[in-house]
Image (cartoon, rainbow, N blue to C red; front, top):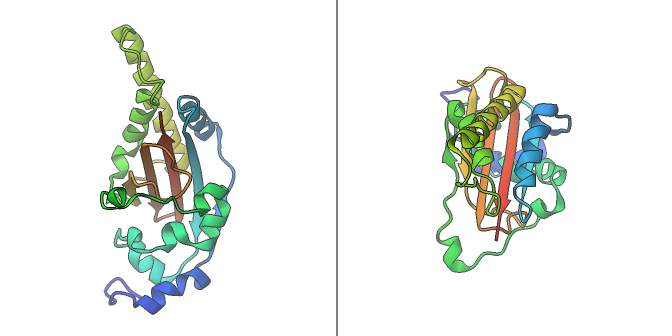
Length: 207
């Protein structure tokens, strides 16, 4: 299936659950642990979770991946190998009131070159009860900002090296599983076309 081929059929897409090979990655360096520890420490009523998966070659999956259209595939997060590798709460849907369901945002495209700055803002801003104390001096807030930027850039480099053009980013504020009980949620998905690796980073917080 080449880039010029027609859109895969529903039958071809549905077959991905059986045909697509997905493996979970479990080893992370200190750069990853440092960011996760910081995010979790400042969200005691919420949490942070990071996971990586490698997707094997498949013409249907690759058709969507090379066109930056992965959110159209349920297998991006619903593939059995993906869900089974996540904590149990990710495997259960989160029941939402009808009014909330009507306000769901869905997946929006992001930009890889901005990803580390978005992560840096989440580190700098903190959680609901650990947000930046405005009584701190400007110098102290600057120190926190620089620390957040450095940690986020180190995380990106550990995960993707210096690749930007071949990393497709998607994000959503929607609570797509029971892991998101909070009011403030964000999920980033970044797919590395070179490494065939998908990163999932989720944050949630509540009062």
